[in-house]
Length: 438
Ligand code: ATP
Ligand code: MG
Image (cartoon, rainbow, N blue to C red; front, side, top):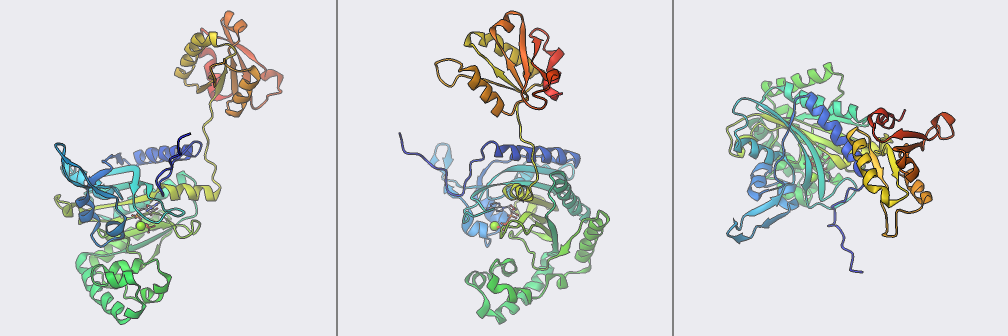
């Protein structure tokens, strides 16, 4: 045998039956987004590196060390372009909104789902290909849109039975307010220079706010005693924050202010928030977002306010599992037992009609070229498929224009549930029974 090849480190295969949990979540999201009138957007996974450098910020973990970037070939199709696998979707989304002039007629509410790529150290809840679902509203400046997005996330948690979360909020104010805070923050950090780790030393003048976001426990004290951004906000910024809180309160959404919540990306202003859980260890943030009123312009568009969030699909599904929430697993309604391969043309015609009538049918198929396999082994497969019914396409029944339908699950021993003969030429008369399982 040839040598086995493995997947790239930190990149996972999502296999059945686990993939059913992913589909289940995606269905819930699609349905919910529809109810909030958010529309789906799909952008390319590859973008020009420059988009992320400009959109995320040069002095961020992502751009400094996490991107998968490469030079495209230089040939008649391309010019040695520097490309990057998207590490997040907001920059791409804003690029698309600008490129297609989507805000021409007013605001847009959008959502996306898909893989993102970051070259981080793989561990529980942290992968190199991971998946995000995100919602973004562009062209709306008010706190009501921040609130709508948070309420949308809360509705999703409810919909999927997720209870172990708490909401942390903060306000980053506006750039000029941040600039005043920044000066005092740098002074504070310089006073405690001996306590700063290497990364903090490096960011002291390029991105000091990000130091507040540190995951290094040794810096806890210096960070906790740092000047708080909220104390530098003007009345307008504070009013925006208060308006958000009032809407959350009216909707009984519990929140707490985390003064050190600054978010990893550079482009946020005013509201920032995270949904966190204590049940996933260090990777406890399941959903994060905020307002980014300057990004559209930064990426070359006409200035437009915007706000959004992204959730980590792996983390959300892990939390669902951790909580013991039962996700329905798909099983076929029926399993087709086929004693003789000679019957296949007629059998498959019947199965097509059943599926058209909404019945899910798993067909027995030969594992080897020696034939269909014994009835015993076929029934074993029927049983382990989880189907509620076996359809037995015996020759005698087929000759009489019929198929035998045998319950495999509940009421197996019940005489009333015993094997029934059904007509092949009138599937609609009995397909309903298979579908509902009644
Ligand atoms: P963290 O602080 O955990 O690194 P982040 O601030 O880098 O998160 P965002 O860029 O805000 O994360 O992404 C939004 C969400 O996507 C996160 O809250 C998390 O749930 C998820 N996420 C981010 N990076 C990863 C990853 N490498 N693997 C799995 N999920 C991730
Ligand atoms: Mg990160």
